[in-house]
Length: 400
Image (tube, rainbow, N blue to C red; front, side):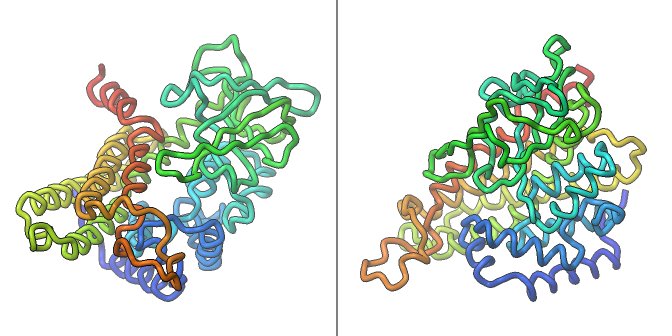
């Protein structure tokens, strides 16, 4: 197995790097370098730039509006975005709902939704988790009953990321309550402006508004918004989650974080010397770098074997990438907290401090690091908790 990039792939990496350097707005990059999420307007602006180049949907085939790239090209593109850092194409549109419509949707659904997903004319969100159905997603209870030319949906979704921005939501709903757990579930597309939908914010531990709970009270969804077959929505869900977990390795993002960590550790003083001179701290940074290199090699192995797979079932190895990728990101956040020391607890936006007469209480790089640390506790939970991923691996690899 040759895990080296070809000359053509190396040239492609430089093409992507040059495009980002030329087209990424300076304000967007500065915000992300500082560890803050880009605004909705910045995400939309950047995805539309990518779409004008034909790069908004790296995983999509050409006939659906994508570039038709190889797995290696997709990986390179994702890695360069994360290292820049630049916003990734909106995952709900590009990595989740879009591929499901391409795989299971009707021609009418593809024509209606895919072009608007690419250009981020519509912002989508994911309606999967419920108060009693998180990692055990098949336990969902939101109901959809067929009445005339509509489904009537009642229930609740929770932890719905960025629903406050969303124009549409893709839903898993129970359409046959008498069926077995994974059966009797359907996949629906719903306009968020439909009467009966209520979005309530969930303020997370660091004070951010990223997730929401969404209530459905007699919400009418047209029958033609069913994706795939009625009561076979679990097939769509498994396909979607397999795509999502592959992207959660986030090698480029962790590499950028480690680079930032080293810079901070050179500025942060401990006992009169830069923290980076502390042997114990250096050892921990080295351990993360070794873990990241091992993860990178595992991603390359998955890419190499994926090109030979004849079926379209999710590769159980994506569970390995999800577990290790999220663990490394959490390790990075822990060391960033240690490097910043008490400054990590300074909150707010340093850009808003310009022109103020107040004395600086912390360097710009320290703002919000505690918030990042607490927020990233979620990474080993969402997308199917790491405990669930270990169960998947035990069944797939060990036959348990």
